[in-house]
Image (tube, rainbow, N blue to C red; front, side, top):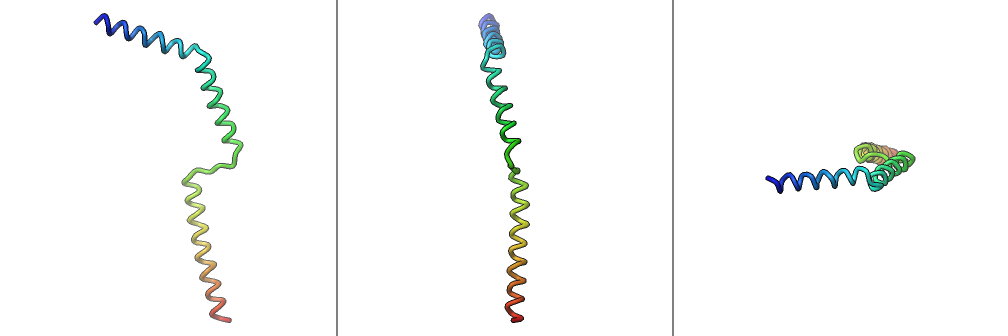
Length: 74
């Protein structure tokens, strides 16, 4: 039982040190910087990309159909 309290106390102290260390601030700053950088970029989600890709594929098929119709009428 004493060992458990000892390890809990050590874990608590380590967590407190990490919370109060510059490492926590560095992590927050890096995350904020990355979020700001990504927001400035013209990025889309994978779902948005897939939707656009499907639309382009359908349009390509339609253009090919229309080209084939024009060729057959010529």
